Amino acid sequence: MEFVVPSKKYLESYYEGCLEMWNNIHNNYIIHNPKDYEIWKNTIFEELKNKEKGINLPEGIVPSVTYWIVSKDEYIGTINIRLKLSDQLKKYGGHIGVAIKPSKQSGIYGFKASLWALDKARELNISPILATCFKSNKSSLRFMTSKFSHYYKIEEDTFEESGKTHEIMRFWYK
Image 1 (cartoon, helix red, strand yellow):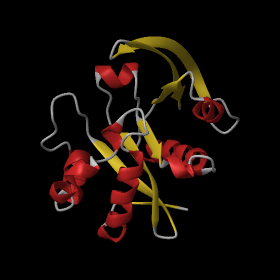
Image 2 (cartoon, helix red, strand yellow; image 1 turned 30 degrees about the vertical axis):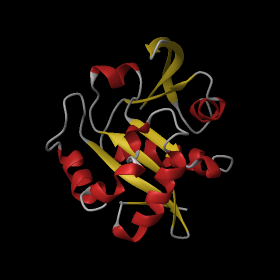
Image 3 (cartoon, one colour; image 1 turned 90 degrees about the horizontal axis):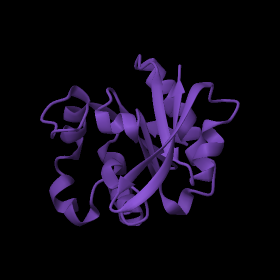
């Protein structure tokens, strides 16, 4: 398993991953809509560079760095590290987003990706680092409370989305 800067080498595999993930993850912000592939396949890499530099960001979107998780040239998932926090991200989202293809979620990809993302956020001089998850997401909670995580503060909260109440956990790391 590797963590790579998105590149053309993995573009077709990424597209296949987007097809698998689009209706199977809570928030699709971290991937591209596969229905629009003919549009974004030619602009994705410039778009990601601009996001990192904070260029042409829509209102409410913060600068971020994106990495792809690959194994044997297969796209497994995406890591997104937000370089700043908006008010919304302070409530839910935090600095780190990790999305793993549903067909690969039973392995250790999410755990290793989350560990790597915390280290990368530290490398990017983000401190403190906020990571959030739904209280019902047992695998994320296991990671966030593991001996590897070294969080220093936990907050519990709820928020409303589409008429549904979600219980979330916020973990602050140094």
